[in-house]
Amino acid sequence: MDPVCYGNGGDVGVKVRKAVIPAAGFGTRMLPATKAVPKEMLPILNKPCIQYIVEEAVYAGIEEILLITGRTKKAIEDHFDRSPELEFHLEQNRKASMLTEVKKISDMVDIHYVRQKTPLGLGHAILCAKSFIANEPFAVLLGDDIIQSTVPVTAQLIEEYEDPTRVLLGVQHVPQKDVSKYGIVQPLGALGTGSRVPVATVVEKPLESEAPSNLAVLGRYILPPNIFEALEKTPLGHGGELQLTDAIEVLARDGRVDAFAFTGRRHDIGNLEGWLIANLSFAMDDSKLAENILDELQKNEHIRTHLAAF
Ligand code: G1P
Image (cartoon, rainbow, N blue to C red):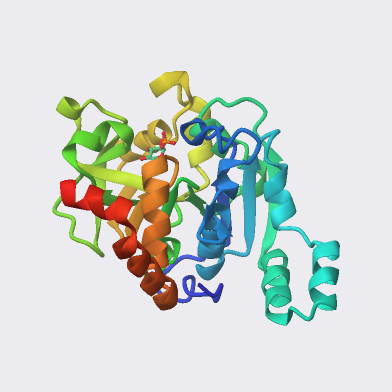
């Protein structure tokens, strides 16, 4: 995906210039791969997951990004920095296209970093962005949710965002048995793909029997600056952590939250199965790679035996 600006161009929309990307989690579901490598640096094909997220923000017209990191995340900063030795090596070896590719990563956008010193939850991570955001609406992109779509989801949301005092949540239906993994909204009306409705409530990881719907918030938000005030007043919630969902619920009670059903195939790359499927799914977008992989899968006797027994 080329980081050309897509969102922020409409006549109606509100300018959203800043994005926050929380990247402080341990990635325990992907251990031991994540023991010394930040989970955000695990690749999908030959690109680290975090680069997909940053490119999605840039594509949507975001000008400044704040990455919320932690002590073990230095590799992320290195990835988005210049690499003089590598650039020199590529230059010497006349690898021009690779050199352009490598330089593009560090030139893409202004990235700022702040460390979340204690892992007190997603809401606490977002609070770390308070002074960076100051007084404007901003996008939040969660790194575990990689969404494959023609128009990246953040651009879809920004196109839809009209009122800088409201929250806009990117949602999709999930299987009923999975509702307890997500923030679940209660929409005020039917919600078809590509449409937006106000939200009555939003609940973090409800029991299946208590979920108000099966519409889940899938890691994409546009938030107004007054979310910080709401976060500061919100008590610790699910898992003893400060939950972003609980602060959004404060604004929902005030009638200030909408949900938008975005278009796209969402992958939870925070677990092994989701990460593997994401790799295969992205490979299908590259015709040469797709052909080779499908051919290999068909030829591989071990895989064929398993498929036959499935
Ligand atoms: C977080 C949010 C949750 C959201 C989910 C999307 O949960 O708290 O509301 O639905 O991301 O992936 P986590 O997966 O970090 O536990």
